[in-house]
Image (cartoon, rainbow, N blue to C red; front, side, top):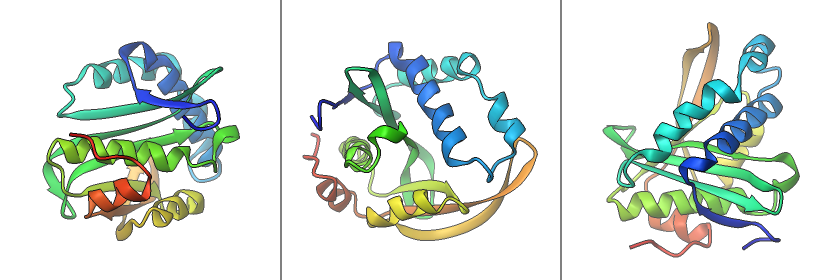
Length: 185
């Protein structure tokens, strides 16, 4: 528990809160990097069913954890197994988002570490994460967790040309330890 906030495995009933947290995160973090019309078009109603499917996936395929306080879910991190390794990684951190008022208190680090621990418990040896190349805070976050920049590449999102930066961890036990998490068995 960190300041009244606990980290726990997400449940299917958390889908709407996770969708809302992700959308709020995109709207705050990517304003000016992604077309505003794309951010405005994001909706919890459209996103929640996707999260329900992710949360119903077997634990060996997907890991989703939430940070929860008195006000409910204030953040989450998600990861999954990659069927085809990318840049030497067999797992991917697919998302890490926190409400702005709980950022910079170690919750993000602990959420990422918890996902890494579970992916490692399912046999993963390396994990990749992606950030918009123009998002200096996201890049600093991954770098502070010891991630190595391995690629910057163009991609298109909702018709907009963007550049993403791929960061990886090839030593998941070190990432888990850095996050202050005990290995999961």
